Amino acid sequence: MNSMKKLVFPGLTLVLFGLALTGCPKAKGPTPEAAVAEPTEVATPVASGVPTVDVGSDWGTAPGFLDTVTFHYMKAELTAESRASLKKNAGVLKTILKASSGVKIRVEGHCDDRGTLEYNMALGQRRAKVVRDYYATLGISKSALDTISYGEERPLCTEMTEDCWARNRRSETTLKSATPVQIPLPK
Image (cartoon, rainbow, N blue to C red; front, side, top):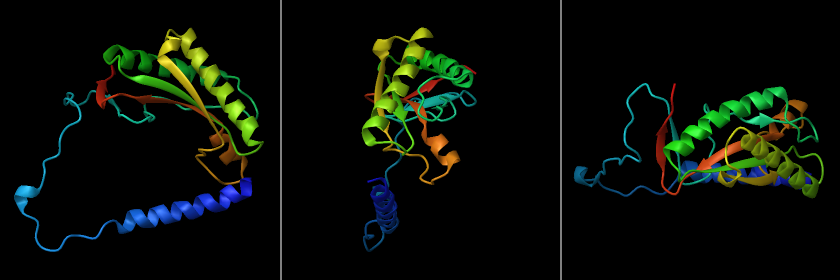
């Protein structure tokens, strides 16, 4: 089963990449300048130099603001390094929740592709739960946090090396809002 996924995923990726490059055929003739739309802003501009987090209407990470936590092989325990990252994340999450109560937080658990699908889904859920529970000890309400396991289904890396497997054994904190918002963060 795992070898089939390794063959199908790269092929599908190439097909989708090819479609993205070719795009739709262009209309013939000049485009009137009046028809060119001005871009609309998603949020109120923030003073330059102030860091902001853009939260969209789909689940997404906030790279640079929220750290990814990694785990040891077949483990769902937090290391000292993981706890430090989650403390930093908790400060950012508290600021985000204070600025916009409509933002939802989800902790995603991920695994490498060794083990059965069922085992990896359960392990991913344990990883997400341990991060959620640690956030709760840091003062973030459990009711503000959701968890999901993707098991081995969303790898960052597909090589069969220890370094690659280690990158896939992770938990990510993702955000979403009913409408996109831009939240300024203290420096």
